[in-house]
Length: 239
Figure 1: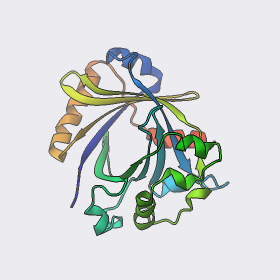
Figure 2: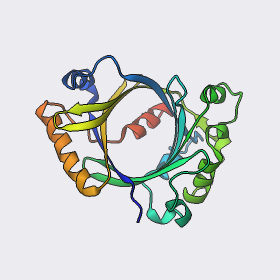
Figure 3: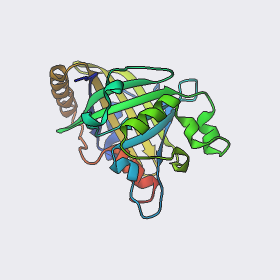
């Protein structure tokens, strides 16, 4: 069965984010961006998309690299049609099927990504464009055929943005090509390190090395709930 690779993620304790950035030699120079999620904000229903393993996200970089993502995670292989498993890209979209690893947690994730024209996110946020314009035709088809849940995109809420800073190609001891990303929202502060490997065997070795390098620097891991869930719960007033 298709597997494009493994993404390994390590989150660090929010109370020590600045200390971690110093230990990693990171300060100025990261790329600022904003990240926004969409959810069904129906009163009395708790994160219905996330509970069905559906994450809808847009990223604004301040330039021409804005994009939107339809992600199924955790994803069952049986919910991905044979046609989708046989495709990597199409008219304006690209699909990645990989395992997400965080500490001992393992899950399959399928992400359909499309670029967005500059200004599209702002237009949806100010009400001059409908929510569905954040997603291309291919993404909407992927959602309809693989998500297993009927969704009216225009009935969703584009939640307030999370401020983020991203550093790429960071070297942490013997581990290279590490991506470091910081998210801040009100009193929430997250730092996540991630690396991608093509095979499960290489991923297992890389995960051990990265976790060892962080432990050697006295950096405390935070293996609780994912940052996406924490942010969504905060944004919709659940904690």
